[in-house]
Each structure stands twice: as C-alpha cells, then as structure tokens.
Length: 131
Length: 455
Image 1 (cartoon, rainbow over the protein chains, first blue to last red):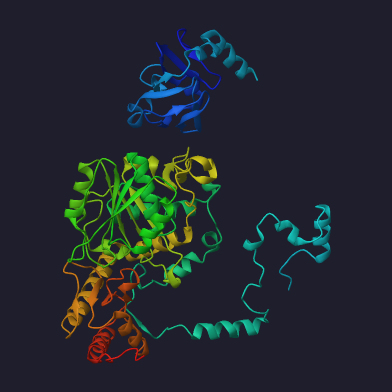
Image 2 (tube, chains in turn brown, blue; image 1 turned 120 degrees about the vertical axis):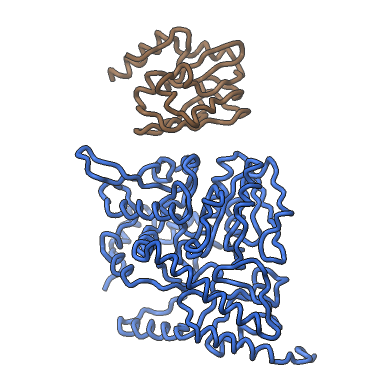
C-alpha cells in the first residue's frame, strides 16, 4: 500500500504539495514512484521560471518510462532540488522528504482548495487501480 | 518496365474519390512560386545500354589520374578492401535504423564497438552512435553546452573549419545564442590573450589540428574555460591525427566532436560522412543522439540494447535534444571495421606516415625561392604555403599538370590571397610530392604581365 501523508495536498497527476505561507514544496507521490520504478533522471526547471496551473515543469525518467510532472498550482520557482541531478534515486527512497523537486511562490494560494486531500487521493488511486 | 505502380485509371479513380480532377490540385496549398514548374534537368529517358554508356562517359571525366593535395576537412586515406565486402552484407546494407532494436543484435554490437573505439581515441567516457558529420556535430555540441551550463554565449575559434562555423551560425540563428569569433595569431593558432571568457560563456569551441593544420594548445584553453564554468568543445576534421596527438580528453575537453571520414569512408565528393561525438559521463543526459549499452539476458548471455534514446525524436519528439540523430549507420559501420582491422598500432602507423610525408613536403616547399610555410605552429598533415603570386592562379596552372595542389585560402579568408592549404597523407607517394615541388618552383618563375587589363 502506498504511503499517503495526511498533511499534504495531491493532484490527479500524482504530485504532492506542502504549503507553508505563500510558498509550497512540490514532488511526486509514493504511489507515483512505485508505478514508475527506478528513477534514473529528473529534469527540473530553473529558479525564476514561471508556470501556469497544470503546466509541465519537468520530467521524471525511470527505467520503464518518461513522465511529465505538472504544476499543482500556478507560481514561480524559488528553489530547485539540485541533489536530484546526482542522486535521482532519492525520489524512490524518500518521495516526500529528500526527493522533493521544487519550491514555488504561489500566484494564488486559494488554488490549494481545489486539490485533493489525502483521503480523496487515496480513493482516487483505488478507483484508478480498479479500472 | 513500369516505375509508377499505379495506372492512369487507378490515379483517376483515386482523384475522383477525393473530388479532384487534376493531380496538381493536391499541391494547391504550396504557393505557386515555390512549385517546380519546369522539368527536372536530367534529360530524356534512356535504354539500359545507353544509360550505362552515359555513366561510363561521365566517369571518364573524373580526374582519376590527378595527384591531389586537397584536404581541408575531407581526406584521401587508404581504405582496406574488407570494408566494402562486410558492409555489403544485406543485414547491414539494407537496415535503416533499429526501431525494434533488440532484434538487431549485429547492428547494436557494431554500434557498441564503434562507441567504445571513439571513447578510446578521444579519451572520453562516453560516445554516441554517431551523427551526420563533424559540422552538424559541432553545432549539436554548441547546443549541448548551452543546455549543460544554461548560458548562451559561444566563443568559437576563427581557425575552426569555416563551414563548421557556418553550420553553427545556421543552427543558432533563431536562438538567443551569441557567437563570438576568437582570432588567431601569426603562428596559426588561437590568440589566448584575446580570449575573454565571462560568466555568460557556455563554451569555447576549438579545432585541433585546426583548419590550417596547426595543433592548438587544448589544455590551456580547457583550463581557461573551466575557470569560468564554461565547457571546452574540442573538434577535429582529421581523425587520423588522433593516432599521433595527445587525446582531447587527456587535455581536458568536455565535449569532443569530429569527422570520422578518415576512417575508411570514401571522399564521395564531400559526403555523406560520419560525425563522432563523445563527452563525459556526467553530461550523458544532455548528449544528442542515441547510445547502445551492453547487458545480459535472463540466462546470462551477453546482449546489446538501445539505451538512453528517451530524448530521441522517435520517442518524444518535442523533448528531443536533437532531431537529426538518426545517424547514417552504415558509415559508422565503415569506421568501426576500419578501426577494428587497422588496430591501435595501425592507426598510429598511419598517423606517423601522414606526419612524416607532410613534413617532408613542407620542408621542400619551404625552401623554394618565393615560397614559405606561413605558420610556425606544429602541424599534422596539412600546412599553409605562402605563395609568390595569388594562390588561385598557381593552382589553376597546376591543374594543367594534373595536380590538384591544394585549397586557395582566400575562398574563406579574403585577406589570404597568397596562401594555399596543402595536405599530404599516407596515400601520397614521394614522386608525387617531388613533382608538386618542381611544379611550384616553375610557377614562381612565371612573370606577372605588367598590365593585366589593358583598357
């Protein structure tokens, strides 16, 4: 069973977001890293890049596939987890911790309200699995 | 014999189903002035015997019995006969590109061997499965350096092949790339004092041996580039020089790119050729093209796989690092067979012969009255001769003696009217060199007419 943290918000594209003031940290979920398998490369944006809601900000490449990663919320990148360049396996080992990807300054923090809660996300991946 | 497999009736029926009456209606979207309205100038149809006679006639006009001293990016080298025999095997000859790669173990194995030998020659950690040629390779290296450093200024040496520089300009014309030219000194190599690398510089691009045949100080340039966080892109047009010189990798290059034509690929009027591309392991994700890896299957048998092609056009076109990485695999195969049959010692021996014969020729030409060797920097198998009269005139006269004496440099460097680039390889025999020297001597004695245009 995938690990789903209660204090985070989620997207149907399997990103998580941890809000702190008007900033937010973004990564991919434990379920997503399980599905992808061993992550071998993470392509990340630059600090200062601006993205709209649902716009692709990078990609995760595993031994199986390459997947786009999408913005859960519109905003500007303020930090990038450069450690993933050297150690992309952190995404597998600790997706909610050292495997974080970017920190953004949110354009409109109220967008968080439309994201999935932990319970909703759990239901969502169950229903996806059932299909 | 029918060359168009559908009959007029079939074509009419197809047009009818599209509600069209004329085949030209299909091309209405193409503006009138861009359409080919004249016949293609290849003449009338011919019978097979006439066609053979026609091509025999064309072939007879080749300057087969001329002595050539032309290099400048395309080199005459001995080609072992085994190459043609092996590449003619239908498994190699008819295959285009391994889209179902694991079924093509033979193709993958030779690409793996090609990559391995390119790494050994260049002193780099990883090489791709080849690119089109050196010029597009240099342009790809420039784009890659920008991806790695996230900077957009490129300093490219004025002694890099002028055509390679043109291709770089074409590739970057509509990007933010700033291209600066680094001048060269009277010695024939780049002016290190003029090198101004700043925090915007993605790469310094240098060729060694350079377009004038001179050997550049790659290590100093690598140090200078690295101090400012820029990459050194080292290129070459004469791959045989790798058999004699310290490898670009050992000099600190970050990306090595070059022309593989010298390894068993015929001159073919200037192409198609084989681009070599190698870099350091840490930049592998930003490398254009594809890479073959060696692995084991579940029974422990050795096998080859097409790996790291996730950024290639046939998988994710919009994310591709390059859209021309469908390489000309047969040319990579030719280079692989050449290197495998020539071997480490053979490549060194070929390089030694090039070096010695070229230096013999340069020494003899340099002693002629009116002539001198223009640049003082060490050279491999090409050198620039300073001529007493415009080089174009001298070269034109040499043609009458069945000698292609070299390249008049004012074609690319307008100020160098009295300079020509001469190339000597292992295929040049000593009598041919002596004949060139004699011919140049007699050309020095021809007096210029006092009035060229008495009007």
